[in-house]
Amino acid sequence: ISEQNSGFDLEWVSKVRVNTQAVLKRAQQIQGRNKNKKQWQAAWLLRAVTCIDLTTLAGDDTPGNVHRLCMKATQPVRYDLLKSMDMQDKGVTTAAVCVYPSRVADAVKSLKAANSSLPVASAMYEEVCQFREACGEAHMKSILAIGELGTYTNVYKASLVAMMAGSDFIKTSTGKESVNATYPVAIVMVRAIRDYFLKTGHKVGFKPAGGIRTAKESLVWLTLMKEELGDEWLSPRLFRLGASSLLADIERQIYHHVTGRYAAYHQMPMA
Image (cartoon, rainbow, N blue to C red; front, side):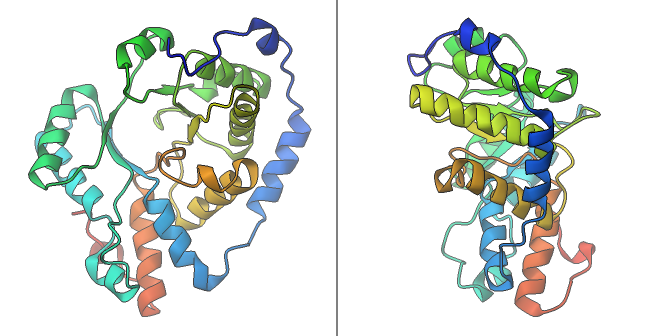
């Protein structure tokens, strides 16, 4: 297990109790925020793009699918739109490309051919500690499958245990389950991250996944992270959005910001 974590603390985990009503109230407050004035929304949306793990986890993925995804990841927003905002030279990409282990080599090959240093992430399912040891210096993300945990208290406990075992990121779900990222669950998980940081000094990243499809929702997630954890967590190093379908809507909203009108979805191709 990595030296970065404090080891398993059973006493801390056993004492955890989460106030459900307080969590739900806080989630409503976050969703009601309208802080981002119109002139700043495009900048916030570009920030959201840089936090996306552009993902394909289909059982019938092919090298061609993965290649197209990689190309979109390296140029997620149309060049003409970026140029209109004077952002064409800022290196706007998604945070990473995420594929199943069997397609990692294809993704690495495509990105290398495109002269891109974009990282490749892959889903992991085995015991957290064993993978922590196997990962060595590589970052490790633990998927909690929050829909199976039953209570917010269990979500908090699972978050703690995953961090104690050495996880660099904790993720709500794969995005394929019937229950995925919700704001109340996110609040519980990020507060576990905050408490863990205050006790150990170690910063753990957070990734919500599943059902995040609109640009407006991405702004709520960024607001949640800013208010709960602060500006440092508003970066791909500590925050990822598991929402590949979200990118199309963000690009569409940026198009509207630049041109004053909405493009049809067929005018915003994935690659």
